[in-house]
Length: 409
Image 1 (cartoon, one colour):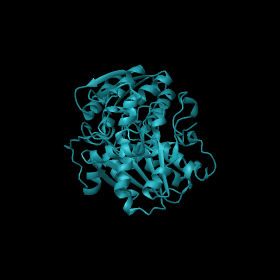
Image 2 (cartoon, one colour):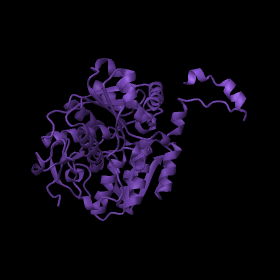
Image 3 (cartoon, helix red, strand yellow):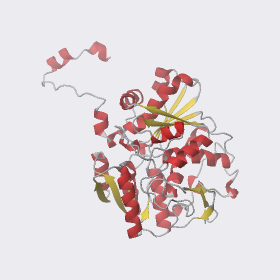
Image 4 (cartoon, one colour):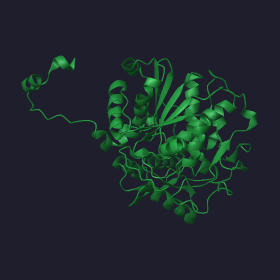
């Protein structure tokens, strides 16, 4: 039983038992949350009995550190994604230890599977068969796929401008897709109203406590692979839940006395989708902010986890940086060429952020870049960084004459 796992309000500190209907702190949630960052976000608190329960070199059973029993998880493999030592990047950049954590190998091709996996297990524990959510694409396709594996039904509110690959994924998995003529924020608010009306569990990021908790698992995997030797972690930031999840994971590891300090965590936003960066840098939460970036997965107007993400990052003395769309696309191409990993534009923001900061980082430090989604999820974005060659006549003499082999070797 997991009865000693509790919720704690990130705002007032009130502690609650975990129940199927509790999503936000009843004392702190605003009367109207429409269009604003959420207040009263609940985080899972580990029980004291788990302290000193793991050490480096001992393989972690992540289910011991999650609030839902292993038997409730769907029979699909999520997490334990590759951690790749990027030899070509090391050589190119003069850094000794650069690691790429590639979550594009998750079942639906994105980091969001970590949250969906736990949300699905939570629903199964309480015998819930319907799950509603809003998404720019990855959370939608993720919940659709994981729900399909669990025999659940996903109801997805999604901007109709989302990349086609992600829309196709949702439909292939049998989800009820509800395209919205509007942005992510409109979809978010509509999905909450839909859950209120139907009683379906809502998976919305930050709103459902299992989303932050599920995303902490990547920190445990990094510890499993590298132990204490992690100096920097770069990750893409949209609504800020991955950021809070990674911080939560390393904070839990510190609570468990497995590590003494957290790595330097750097959130990376697109220059034209910088709600959290602006708030972190200037203490300015612009509730009328409008985002516009090629990296759709981190394109968010008002980050719903904004208050909590900024608070989390300041507490650990982490950092934020912005990069341009041109830098994102250039980084996506370079990362593919030098590592063999094709990630989507939002993931490439991690690499772009590192490139922007590398002169201030000693080259013997251990650096992890979180690559959160597969490039095939957003082909239109990737097309902006490449150029298709002209077609050749089917004549080998013409082909060999036009190709300069000396430059190709």
